[in-house]
Length: 87
Image (cartoon, rainbow, N blue to C red; front, side, top):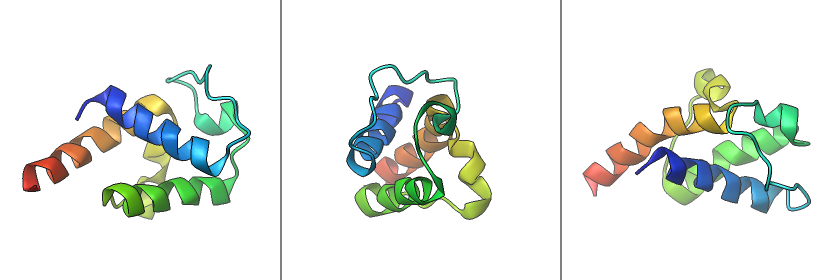
């Protein structure tokens, strides 16, 4: 998996949990919560959807690593690749 794939996964999840958000101009290096109207419940929904859709576990201690699209990709790409290697 690539960083771009991981960014798309996050944007797809956000599109489902916050359908009124305009995701066309999300800057990859800016905190998502600074760009979008996401509250803590929305963020938990993102984490839960990662687990439900992709089998990716994100421990609470790592939540800060999902702040921006770039940091999401940096954190999630190795996790997706590890899952793919097991398949």
